[in-house]
Image (cartoon, rainbow, N blue to C red):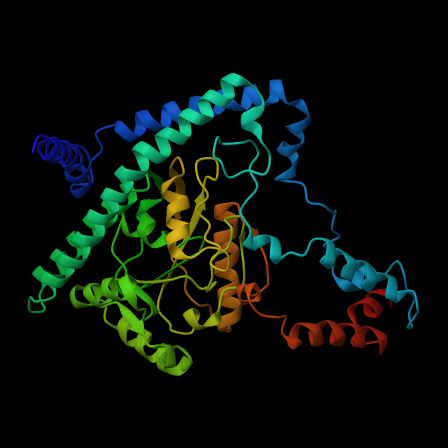
Length: 438
């Protein structure tokens, strides 16, 4: 009995601390300053570790340049300019050198594959996930690393799992109860309160520190919010500051339970797998949602897959054919404190969440941007590219024209045919190169 009483006291004390120091402040969007103190200590520790690494292992300092300098130096000039130094007016055999060079560049370091692997760090962040044994540089650094492992796995992980369980449970229970109410302004208000509160709790479960910029441009009702996509927690990051109507495919298991509960309280747009293939049906349902100016803004990630926090890849045009006002949002994570990128082809959801919850923290910046509308004479593809460029510039991300679907599929024949057509036009004398030479 004594052992049972001791366990009960420990659990009650633990839950009281969690409730008083984290859950209640999260519900009201307040902070007691604990996370700020934690982050200051963490920053000082990482700065000290970086100095120790530089002092004890100078040979590894080359890592500082590896994050910004690629394996090869690319010539980003267009085909016409790239061939101008190798050919005359007519076809020449030397043209093959240009295409061979581009092919070898793609083999050595293509622009797509590297976007689906974790972002390289400028310096080690005292996490175990590294290819170099930095923790053997000095005994003092080894002790700090071991202490960090104990803190992350024995203190932070149990706390974060507890918070995540409470947050998800409250979300399912709260949305289910709110969903029983008749449609009214009260129901909408309660739904927003439940979503905001539970998402804030879940963000605390990740030791999340989020910096929101330009809040005057937050997405408004009846609009469409589009953002770059790094992780499933992008939804939590954005919903902590405002509610959205989610768009996505119907899932099973725990995710399916959450989806069915959420849609009872809020008009989220979930599609069956068969419906997702019918683009016209999807567009119709989204247009009906946007037409109602009382409904929450739709949150869409036009890339369709997670990219590794360094780039923005092709935006699918479907999101920009709906009409209405587009509210661009740029999200940029700080990889120094934890890797938020989800490589779904390598890690399942449970493994990914374990990696995130055993990191130091999730730190990111969110930039709300001025609303954008489709200009006269602009098609959906041009509009999508214009929005993508704005997000890339604001977030300091590399803009790439490639489809994120290349993560699991081969390059479409249309990409090859486009290059062939451009070269053919040059040969027959109708290309840009000959026009400039004339």
